[in-house]
Length: 379
Picture 1 (cartoon, rainbow, N blue to C red):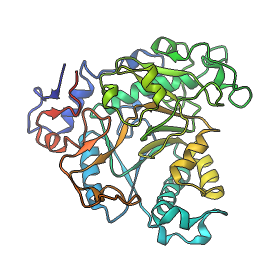
Picture 2: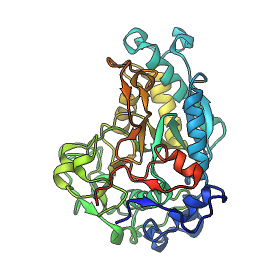
Picture 3: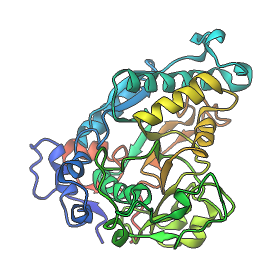
Picture 4: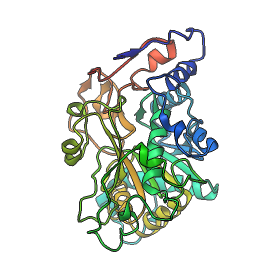
């Protein structure tokens, strides 16, 4: 099995993105997505510089130029276009601007500032009338094969949310989520054969009716029988971009038990935490700005977003596609919100959970056209 990527067909003098194109087009990563019934134009959208979204926004405090330098390199090397949203210090948010009932003292300035910066990103999506956008934090990492991964993810989200030609859904719990939690799907695990039976989307390769795609988190749950969340799942068997379950972090226990191999499971989101990266549709952005920007700030932003997903159409993947990058050096540099008890300890080696062909870990190799290391060479 391939343990590193050597760009044998790419001269070291070529632009580094040629390496990424070689990966995307290889037999290892080429997705069978092209065989599905989504329109050719929408299919190609996922291969564009904004991953099939209208834009990609990255929230970053102006002082974290280290994060901005690294993410500028990482996005350039993987042919991704990002726009910066200025991070906010909580002390700069007026108490008068907080939703009624908000407890700024409980939340702390870091969480208040994070909430406001994400609201500003949503404001931008709405004011620019973008059909969708991806909102990310500035310390994230992803696999070099991200575009191929998201093609498969889109096949899953369409299968779970697009109607059949007769107007019904493959998953009957999708229509009954607010009425009868006892309704069960015809079967829980769906696959590529099911994707070909749904109506092709017209607006987005990810489907025409979703609010949020939580594709970067540090943990999520799958719906149980008693939950009022759609219960079917789309399974990508033996996904070679997935690490072995023994090395995976943040998995729901039920995922470990039901999918002990290297399967990737796409499902409706329940209780995700950490907002490393999430896509929002225009309708989703409007709803979140209303419910979390104007009405509710009693909890941390990711907890509020998880609560939002209990009543709206949100989908996720386990494992997720974006992870928190932890650089080598002092551990205290990791976060502007959470203070570590061992902040002065030195991390000897950079790492990202659940990411095999990490862009951030391999920045030097990508810049220099060198072989790319696999963080989890367990095949």
